[in-house]
Image (cartoon, rainbow, N blue to C red; front, side, top):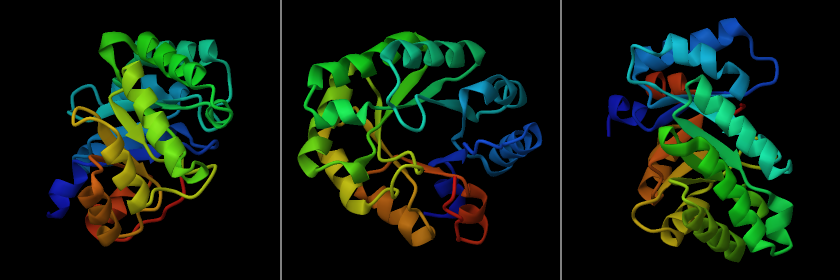
Length: 224
């Protein structure tokens, strides 16, 4: 795989709390220049990205319930609805981890389904499971819940609360969903070898704040 092919896997990400309009604009310009799959931003920045990317193939992705996932489902659904109205075509939502830990599986699935319904036909939903905080059994379980709820991706991590993606987690997630669902690895991709290892393990998308480094000099700054 050459770097041009690798670029198509990348969600070029900027989720820092102090991100400025200038930085978001640069993110979009880089995404166009390097032909990244998408930009991933907080919901308040979606409209700007949609405007800047309207004549390009780069998608706009918004996080929802980020980074904790512990807010009520109505709040997540409303944020998703607002993001889609502003131009997001992908939504990366964080599960309620505490709810999963206490085995309220119906609650977890309903939480995901609320976001899927709010996103509607205009946007796909990726479910951030925060794999580093889960047991293998919990990873398998929540992947099934995400699929049942209508999500299109399961995603390893926020890159904020815990360590990022691992090859083992990606492999397990890939095995835990049907062929129709995709896997996004976020965080923990430090160089080309790491990126290729995630892809070999089953990732079809890579979330990183340093996509430019990956497709130019092969190194990555893993901070979000």
